[in-house]
Length: 267
Image (cartoon, rainbow, N blue to C red):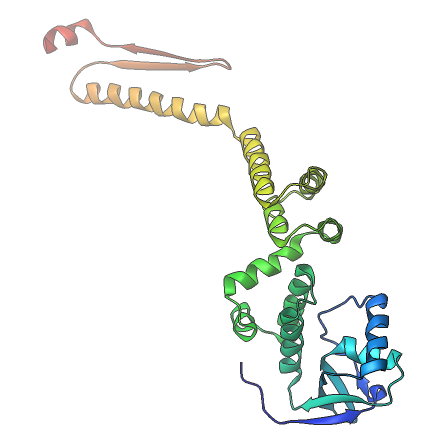
């Protein structure tokens, strides 16, 4: 991914910097910010933040934790690399920076990728290329958003993995999926156990929905048509065969009459 190389290092007032509206990270724990602020008071900001200029202000691209902690620490200025970036490139860089630093959980990553695509009118293929991902991987990531907010919360609070979440997505029914999720949590299932459990639920559901009587009826009609075709063939050969069929709620009654004279001629 090619970004313009025009950049410079400046000391900027934190008040002239505003958060990135495309910031993918949504959670900044207060206790972590307090620890970082104390470290900045003692040692300063060791790594400059990255910003892009927007008229008389600067928009954060990377380093929002450092910027927030610097304000808490009372710093008058903060080292910042000012880079000429388009809003789209800024959004892409912000997402990449957070993904590389593992600052996002997998649901936040999925939401950020989807928001980037929607806000910048980017296709899955283009977005995957800009982020250095394969298109199937990106599609699988976005599919995670099909889980409800409550399901996402339960997955994260119980330390389940992205693979757990993807296994649950195989179930379409929200109520049944929630019940399955609660079972996975209660039994502390690993990914392999979850896969097997979800597969068994889907198989049971498939068996319950299978239209057994209709399937058998179709097969019986095939046999009846075969008999009818055989009788028609005999008629075309000059044999006065007849086929009568009666259908009730419980059975088919079939009567085939072949003249004995036709049987004697054949012998």
